Amino acid sequence: MQTLPDLPATATATDILRAGLQAADGPVSLACSFSVEDVAIIDLAAEAKLPIGIFALDTGRLNEETYQCAEAVRERYRLPIDWYFPERQAVEALERQKGLFSFFESLENRHECCRIRKVEPLGRALTGLAGWVTGLRREQSVTRALLAPLELDQPHGGIVKINPLIDWSEARLWAYAEERRLPVNRLHRQGYPSIGCAPCTRAVKPGEHPRAGRWWWEDPEHKECGLHK
Image (cartoon, rainbow, N blue to C red):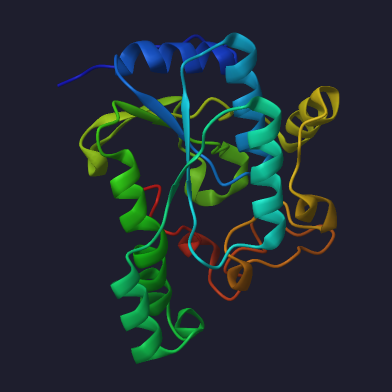
């Protein structure tokens, strides 16, 4: 079984990316939702000239602002973005049988929608990769508190999962974004610290947890879509 290197507590995000690339020893791509975290990683990788690809999942329910940010990123960094879409027949069957908002009706239905629109396309996106990069941070939610900088992603064939921003605070993240003048999704400035599909994301109120706007009708321990198991 593959073992991962032990990283010192002083390892920077770039150090984690480099160690992850070395451990993967093959093609690695960033799963990009065009959050401020993901754009920061793209900037870090570009600055260090690291060979990391970019792929994105177009669920069919994204905000217009997300597409605008994606285009701004593509133009600034001159990097190709590999877009993956849900299987047409699965989406058509879901909407014909359960309507357009079945995810509001139960946790099971919401997971079904996420599985069709996100999880299955992710599986295709990861095919052939030796590792993938995420913008996950420990402080984002209770479901992410035990993350490690480098992990073996067993549900996806044991490839290396790289979490370079794991210990970054929101303040540090935004300081970096301001310093580097990163292209940022405009919804972040409108009270959306976490951005997903348009129907499943709302702005948060002052003092609310940053993930409170994601699937806000569910309990905190359920607020994942299946991409990160």
